[in-house]
Image (cartoon, rainbow, N blue to C red; front, side):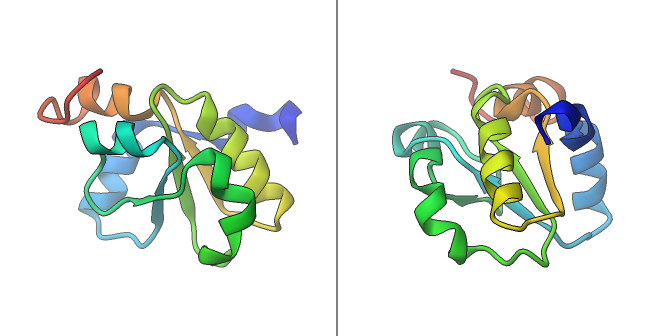
Length: 111
């Protein structure tokens, strides 16, 4: 799986297009509570990476799940956790919320 991580990547621009088209997917924020308080994407749910393995049953493996963190590193680990739990429609938001703020929505605070 780790050999094919680039296949899991999805650009902020494509996620925005999916949102605009009304496509159904789960936006999963795996950052910590203090980071969530600073900024998060509208409609996202938060499960910190450290809690994901024990809370994976809160997610439906039949849904597409797009995972993000601050810059896209922790979310790769989250994608692997989800993959190992049987999720096959999981993607990593390239560059995380930082890239989202820079490329898509500058009103989302950067930190």
